[in-house]
Length: 78
Image: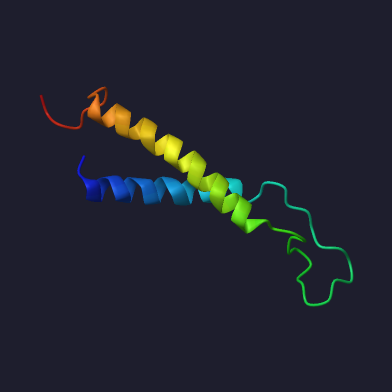
């Protein structure tokens, strides 16, 4: 794995994990909140979710990297 493919894999894993963490802790806004859609969250805590996503994606990427360099799964023909 070269550094370019490593970055591509990390970005893909990061976005997948972000979409999994977005629904965590969502509470709808109170009725009568001016300027908000009815389905908009009251406090989305996006920075917390970005940091959580980065931590989880880093661990997953490390596992993927270890599997690739150990040749447990090989996409090359023998």
